[in-house]
Image (cartoon, rainbow over all chains, first blue to last red; front, side, top):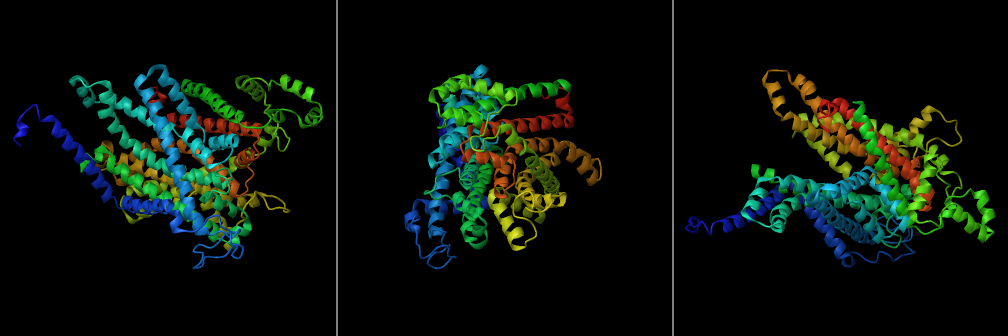
Length: 301
Length: 325
């Protein structure tokens, strides 16, 4: 308290305390969001399952010719497929594929989108025009169709699915970063920082970035959910990851044949539930993050 | 109004060009001989016996040219309706696509109407009774529906209605060996259209709810209420009309997503539309067919967006009068 009287010392600690409390408030808000916590618990379980897949289940490629298309049993928790492979093992290892695509593709496009959006927002002029027209064009084509075109060109594989979704998914992030930059540039606290003599880099790093990052985190979370659905859809169509890699969508692909659909429902129901559960968990987290990170809701509470 | 529509059309053309350029560039990276996609198959067999004439023909068609020149050639063909030949079926691409458009339009049209009929009224109801049991049920439903991929929903629907209850056909557009009629067509349409409609009703419901809630809390609605107008008048004449504007935008934004959903839905239900053709073009690595699909689907999405923009201007006088830019 005594230090607060000294005008030279005061600003720094106050800013630091404010910073921590904002973050803590966000965390508290997130933890109070019941569905978000449930989503986080489910997702953490799935992530642990994917990381320790070898410990949780056995051999996803092992084919047991004595147990072909068997329904769930104590030995094979979720049954076996037409080649005698354990469905549970393929679900567990399929989680790796889904999470790799979700996190990998979204990381790529958030970086590309931020860079392009940042350039467009900062430079303006013709750079802005070119970037925004490219964004409009990409946004007006159905992503799935575009991804199909690219996969048809480079061939289906885990790497190409990640790369294609990553290289095509950036318009949302780009628009968001540009919009935020344009809005924040006019904000009073930025003018204030400039008046005090903060450099351009300092303004970008300490004033613009923290504001943009929370919106980007929300966008990225929902993006992970969409990317997981997109990968599953592609693999379902036979255009996603190639055969030996276990993928939930690819597992469901087999159910396009009526005999699989009718006679061995455990082959498509369990991967279907796995996709829905994962995406639901990620969406819950996204909802929680949005409520927790929105500065307006923080101020209101 | 006229100049507004004209301006929108003028913007749509460069975007369409952009789409085809992206598609063409991507497909030109693909391995395989593009000559196969440009020749009439009857000539091709003859030419393949003679390598020098093949090279000559390649030169004539400009296929030894760099990608931008080849794109220009494709474009000049496309303008006159010549989209090349499918390497798999050996038929003209334009003809292949043309017969696939009506089934897709029927499927998507029905699905959109269904999505609006379910999403908008229930979204309004959900907003009017915020935090009620109904609101929770509907919110849970939208969460579940938007987290379940269309193909899981579709397979579930086939399993329940075609396999278990045996009330509807599991796929196709007509019963084989039976005289096709409207009744038969509708029976085949019910499942795919319901799956696609339901999948899109979920986001529409969520947006309608949010938009309605925002309007319900706005000053003019509070004013209308405090003037003593009946809740019904406030809801219908003040709130609903204004919440329509964002709802129309959302329907426009949903269209590209819906096309993607249609690709998967057509595949599950063996619906002979453009989406199924796109999947075939990709599995067969058929560049001319793929480009044709990109052109047609891209134009359709842009045209639909244009329609939404015009509708938007009709509803919102600010845009019509040129203030909304």
